[in-house]
Length: 309
Image (tube, rainbow, N blue to C red):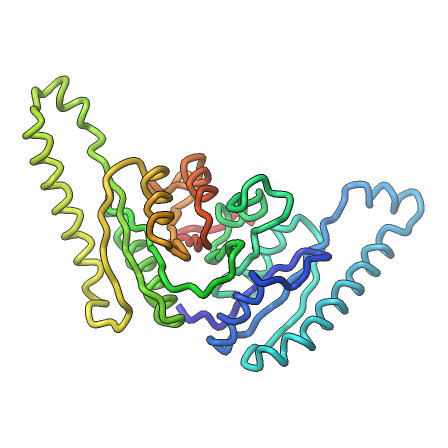
């Protein structure tokens, strides 16, 4: 995947902050085409106003013209800072995440880069409903930029090895992670979190002792490592610094802790659908985990996923 067509949504009245500049630095390195998208949220009461006075559409037209010009003014400045980027400005009206997904599909964007931080969040790492809806429903990868804007040096790609059916998706995720890290000169850690889910059953009903459980866990760990080595084989001669970490425990606890302890700048996660991959589903487990991550996050879907939007 080449990161040459990027979509960067900017909320109305939002300043071009350090998080967005991080996106532009990346885009400049890729000599990318960048679409700056402003979505004006259409209010239901506009329809009532229009029926009463006939002025609501005029209000939207004026707002569209205003924000388009504001973005064009930004582009004049940004073009001087980032000469390798080709900028395009678009303004849409509707529900933000829906319009972002529509624009990403229509423009065939390779990635959506969004600044998820807002001052009204209770926690610095808390991502809002707009970002989470994008992560759930977009076919296009979503890069949710963290609050800090330090250069990305350490990246984790979370790999699910619990089911052989996910092999093609894992290959896609690994390829994206590898290309992304190669483009920004970052190191890459492939991380798999696993747990012997049947330990209690084996102890209670099959008479397994501690030594039996330990041996079984060791064999499972070795088997997972072998699966991962096969997936990484096409990249073994890569110049990207890569390592593998197999972590045991609950995903929502273990992965955020590893990220925090090791100074990880960005995490790449896969999601089959809202109820997708075991351990990395876009349901309550993953959303609670994502909101524990104070770093940037990229989420992606398999080729088989088709958005309903």
